[in-house]
Amino acid sequence: MDHLLTLPVIIPLLTGALGFLFYKNGTAQRWIGLAGTVALLIASILLLVDVWSNGIQAEQFGNWPAPFGISFVADLLSSIMITISGVMGFVVAVYAVADIDKTREKFGFYPLYHILLMGINGTFLTGDIFNMYVWFEVMLISSFVLLALGNSKAQLDGAVKYVIINLVGSAIFLMGIGFLYGLTGTLNMAELSVRLNEVDNAGLVTTVSMFFMVSFGIKAAVFPLFFWLPASYHTPPVAISAIFAGMLTKVGVYTLIRAFTLLFTQEVAYTHHIILWISGLTMLIGVLGAAAQSEVRRILSFHIISQIGYMIMGLALYTPLALIGSVFYIVHHIIVKTNLFLVGGLARKLTGSYELKKMGGLYRYYPWLTLIYAALEIDSYWIAGVALLVGLLTLFSMTKIWMAAFWTPLPGYENDTTGAGFNKISRRDMFLLVFPIVTLATLTIIIGLYPEPFYELSLKAAEDLLDPTNYINAVLGK
Image (cartoon, rainbow, N blue to C red; front, side, top):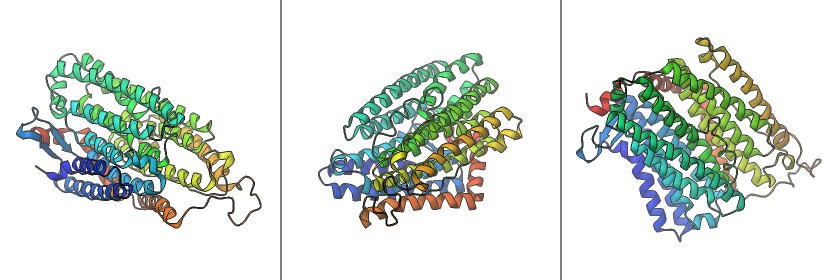
């Protein structure tokens, strides 16, 4: 057994279990939680290096050969996602020490946080479509409890909407799995890739694929299935919002990419054309929603929706350059969007509000990246036009935050030059809040100034997605 494949799941599982054992000791929970995220980060980096150096890694549990046993598989896409999960897990855990109150600690924030990371990583690594459903449910349960911790009316309202729509998505996913098994007699994704191409009725396979497009579309918050996200992401503490914003919808994007490059490629002109329209509408509706908001986290929540459209745009175009753009943009977006939520949380601690009209005197820079060149390369001018328009509207809605929260004076302190209107934060808490922000900002700058290694990773990941032969051979042992 290649332990590097299992560590991204085992480490958060053991950390979560150990945290529950010390549920009465908040200090122990914090230290255990931080140590677990450091270990997860190291293991995720080692896995990425292993896959980059030695190719796709696959293991079967219980000495059952594929496709009969449960498979874990790490190709470049999944190992990139595991690594970025490790980075986000660590920086948000540091931020949480200063952000999460004692009550939420008492009710299990840190163990639940690690169970959430376990579910995320399990989804990225599984090579079995039914076990993907299981990992989805692990994520759903832990994220629902994290969302509801604190028991405020807004949180409960957001959590109920979140869990209901995601349970609907899970039910549709389960129905799709049943149809897939009926068609092929297997649930191993590598074996499914082979057998689905042997089904005589390609139209039937395409029909089944719609179950997965809807289910994964709900998880990714694409149009018109996104309404649960802005109703819930602004309700919990920022540490929870940030990890949700960075990782949860990207799990949905990952599964869409995996399903519609590995499994459902029989009628690309039809399925991916639908995804292209969904992409354009997601970009446009999301950014219009952001432009209409005046609360920082709600603006950023609608931006998540809009930028999901960019990510699946690369899948829809289904060219090497487009998929490179998707992978690159996913990594960039996770870092930037998580950081923007963390910055928003720090701004709120200083000003006492997320409402733009009550904020002021701050400054922040926001970078973003698009897939315009990939769209123009294959003459998809209409989606390129939508992407450009959305980019301008994104700039407009972000300018609202810049002007109101960072450039204008703090209301009631227009002539103050001492910062007396800001809330006081201890040096310890300020360090814990600023360190993750600086870390993610540094990563963003590195990606911008030295994109070559990230481009090379994205290029190889895109090649493996377009030609899944190596994935199939690694799992089935051919």
